[in-house]
Image (cartoon, rainbow, N blue to C red):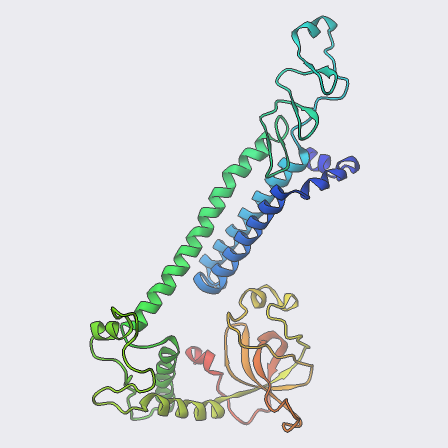
Length: 358
């Protein structure tokens, strides 16, 4: 508490100018970038926030940032402590044992040294650190050392998140390559199985482009020349129709129109990608996509076709769909600003993004 009070004293407000230096600017930028990217990467890609492990991991990431910044600012603004101007030993006879600072024209206390940057005699001076734009000494030695200890630990945690994310993405890519699929085609295949099961159809969807061998699938992408096999337009496989996948896509689009759910906006939504006023879960689970967000006004209707835990994707139902330039408004919007229309007679099914809960 005493340390905190010493920071907010009026006479210490002039210390804020220490922030205007290349050292603190770089340090703050690195900490901000590392912390922000680790949190976003952790929530969006590696460890979902709604799980227990994800919540603990996210709290730990925040904790690293808080304690690192606390010790950093403590080291910077509390400072090392300076020998009072005009200081002299209580016993004048002890002066013979002390050095004299020629710059300050005063005695140097034991273990103190004059800093040319701070232009003061620093108590128990260790060194002048450009990263905190201050000296490390008597009062801030603990905070400075803890800062040096915590930064690598926080970076190791962040690096673990980054590495696991990259290897997770690599694993997913290799898995679909060995099956001669893309991420979109895997999603289409999953929806095809769901459609057949939902309507209890007597048919089986067979992915048409699997060569029947992981090695053949691998060679179609990775060649010695670096150029993939084929022309990218025609994909022929013995026993399959050239347009098997596109036929399935047409069936799914027709099914999507039938299973869409009508929602009504109960609150305004500005169209922000990461809205702060919609709650922390909505903020941190914003869809990681370049697809647009749509602005909503209270009372407007939207036809949702798919969704995530906290977001929905759909088309806004326009009063006049033939207005020039606004024939179709489609995008993402938060779930907590809309409600399902109780009188919706189109369908009672959930959007495709919720199919696993049926």
